[in-house]
Amino acid sequence: MASSTVLLVRNFLSSDEVDLVREALETDESLTNQQIELNDQNEGQTKLALWSNPGDGTLGSLTRSRRVVETAEQMLGGPVLHYHSKNLVKYPEEGGVWNWHQVGQQ
Image (cartoon, rainbow, N blue to C red; front, side, top):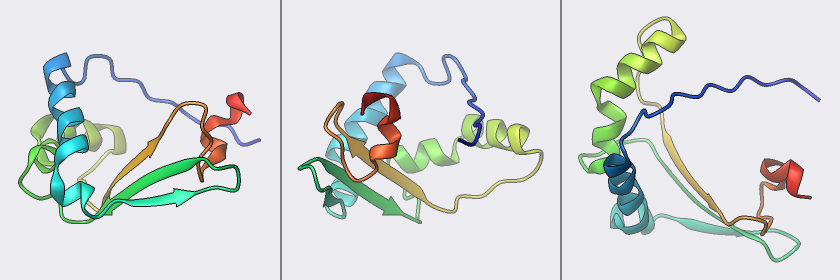
């Protein structure tokens, strides 16, 4: 199995900011209207939304925020730009199309 690196930035967002992002992910019609549902062979489900234009809402503002951009530039050692964003919703212990995300659960 390939090794992986995990980067954890504690308190990157305040709890109020996390609440705003969660609300945007759950209610932003520009996101929820394009969400597709993918079923796996075991009746698990994953909801997926993918977009290239960050937009002017909460999620786009976060994507372009100085904090996100400067942190990414520092981590990658140079300039960054938005390529695409993805929202992947899987419910705990339900499987879903990307079962390998839950390797320890199977």
